[in-house]
Image (cartoon, rainbow, N blue to C red; front, side, top):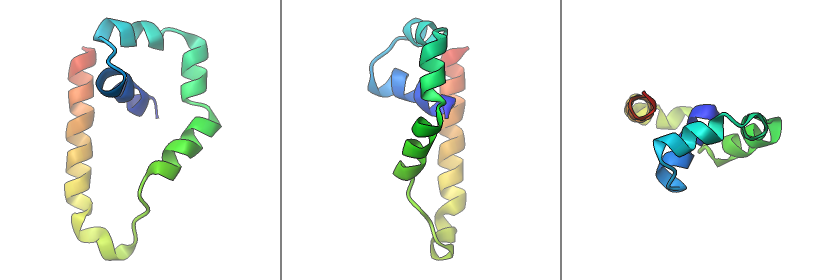
Length: 76
């Protein structure tokens, strides 16, 4: 969940790396970003998949992994 919020800050809200780090040092912000309500909202935005759509699952997972790696590069 926190990784998703970092990605949001950098790519969609226009934060710089330093700005995102500063935002993440705010305990209240992290509490809100990882609250049960925030998690449920994020899960609701995820497309539900059935067993019929499994052929695309490896491709989606690969895409997700590459996005996470990009976020990690930016934060280092």
